[in-house]
Length: 435
Length: 104
Image 1 (cartoon, each protein chain N blue to C red):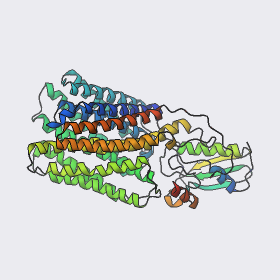
Image 2 (image 1 turned 180 degrees about the vertical axis):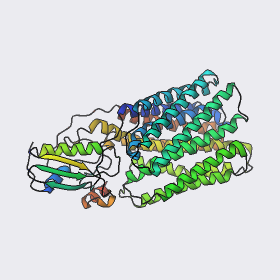
Image 3 (image 1 turned 45 degrees about the vertical axis):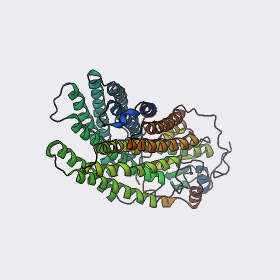
Image 4 (image 1 turned 135 degrees about the horizontal axis):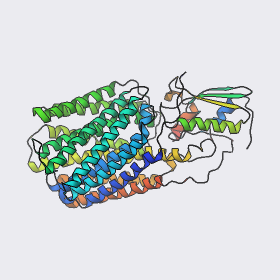
């Protein structure tokens, strides 16, 4: 019989600052959105939209993912994180890079601040890769989830590298093609390579765990991994060197990969033992449903069908919004309340379990705030998308206000968790344990 | 606190029901995580598992098992072994555990 090791979880100072920074970033993102309604009337290459996008993808999404991943990686790879020190440096560089980049785009300072920001971010991603690869190398058993996570880190590094090249190219042009050409590559490998692969890799482990489900075999996940990576690699080469009209094929491969993951989730849902879905999991399934929007738009924008320029411009904006403000944000808003309460609980109560009657992780945050957060978020997202499609600034503003309310509720709940203090606990009387 | 000498493994299992899996909200016995309880005059030997390998709860649950049994049965040496064979699956949840899950 094989025996297991003790807990591999990292220290709380490695994980928790990420959640704090991300919550503030989400609030900042929504506040900036209130002052950016005028930016949605034209092309996506707009200083305000670039600011919003990078605050969303770096300060909000990547920051949360880094923090959660340091906690989840030992679960997925069954070993300790390689270096907590590297993780803290990664956090510092990501935070600094995000703030500098947001400043650079908002005020369009494309010189030193942007170069510094791009360098900070690239080094941050490099350190993250070292940490992930070294942790994975020591994993006792290599799994398809490990494939997803390690590959996503590599795509993140490539995304950061292209971003760095573009930042330099602003002041010292050396790239053979125009900026928008590389922006498409930068954005798509970031979305498909980093976010999508990472979310599938982690979700494949966590979602069945939270549903108490057991999925036999990894056939669907293997297909998902191969199809998405094939689509991304072919798209990258084509975009850089070939310039064929095969974009719908590559988009189809990525969509097929996501479809395979959804089949995996369907099996998990069928075999689940938990009939109830808590608010965190409900929001997770909302996020997965929202994924249909960008996947549909991906096929549309890659098909290069002739549509009026204004319509195409709006569709591109909705495409981007539906990924970052839609799928990724919805997922984080839900999964934060599946991961963070547990992390806080573990650090506060793990030594007290079995001696005192301890609260459960779900008792550590406000469910009412979470419910209203989910409602305001979904309402805000739908209204913002409608406003962008209708090109109505007033409608976008109403949606942005609703999203800001969601962000305030989220931030209050997250900081309520982060500042949790252990109350006076009663020792067990040892009577009827099930009572 | 009342302390006992366990006559049967059932008394040990009853004690272990105070340890609740924090994510699921059900005790580790009804979740089917306790595979073996062996009791003799000097030792209590427990074999338990977790719902998934690499679970961050591994240290918490094994320490809690040690602590709660030592407090309840202080004259016994407590040995807790975390095992992975057979692999836990949801079918191992007891009828009582299922009833609690249905009520959630």
